[in-house]
Image 1 (cartoon, rainbow, N blue to C red):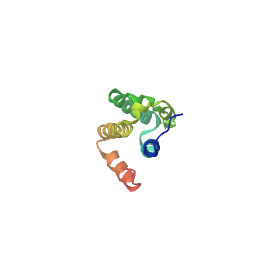
Image 2: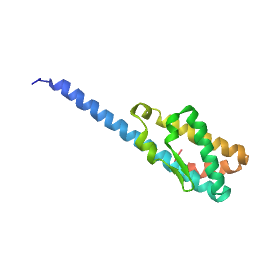
Image 3: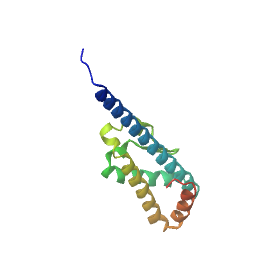
Image 4: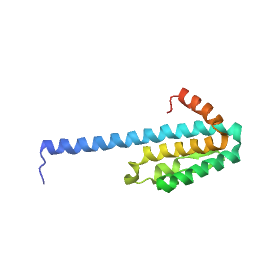
Length: 135
């Protein structure tokens, strides 16, 4: 039986704790962006309609997936955007890119909305989002 020094054991435990903290933070980031995208969806739906919102979201997903393939795990439907498959399939290597990729998705979505509505809808949307302290 191999004897391990207390320092080595302590280091290994600390590494596992650090990894668990990192994973927890990543889940928190996913939760924040899921809430943000749900808020955006619910705010623009009454104005633009379900078919238009689904089309806009699918376009934002497609554009962002070109740069960040992990975004392809997000699913858009008439009910909104689903993170279920995303949470299950994002690999450990891809997890490091989650905050950057989700930020890019929101930015792309806002850009598309700005182009389509001439900033009118976006200004109102940003006020509401900032009021909720989501960004």
